Length: 336
Image (cartoon, rainbow, N blue to C red; front, side):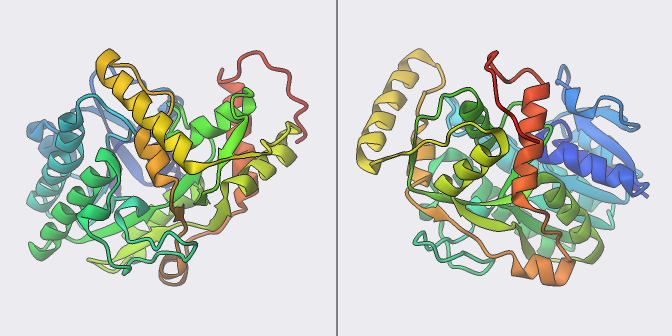
């Protein structure tokens, strides 16, 4: 059994690779020229140089594989060139799935996001069938992933054995960039999180999220969507967990939404002029207006999605960030 994995150097992708290798599956990982392969060091796999926008490299890389996991995406809350994000996330998805269809791949798992799903926003968890429209999408990342998911669905009608998974918010080791959620953890560790917004997220251990991808390939219904999530938590509850894990104090001040939104608009305007990443990404603040809670019952019931302790996953994330140079020489009374 051989699997082709895109996004293998990313947070979720690197965990998918590890889970596949632990199952004895051979892995061919798509990597761009000059990509940082730190998260894949020491693993026995085949690195395949190519690009989501290079159809020839995809066709050749997928040839001879049984499964395809398309986990690659341009994941940023702000970009000065949104057209690039749409090309990678929408056109890139189309290219991967076209190559998979041409090579009669046995099963394809496409990594979407809970951000493309409907969400009431009032604390009621969204599901795979909650109504949603493009106009509900906040920011270019969510919009591009929503459009990419619609492209993926077209390939199901063309006969591709495709399963869509919608991860919530994974946490754990090997978050090397880090992701926006990983940055929250790093900022907390470095004392750069003095206050918080009243919002909520659904967290899942990244290893469980990766295992959910493999279970989707093994057991998922073709054409179905599965939310890969675990526990719905307020941001305050997440910081309380981090306080217990590290011994560092959780922020106690809850910020009002509207002044932060105004500051985000100002930051966005400055960033458009300077080209620098805004300190307060507008899309992130707009997303925080809703409690991003989701119900993973379908994946738990149909796939057997693991539900490892979220607090232990946060602990592994803290361990990894501490061991990999993300702390600014700050003494932490860390309690394992």
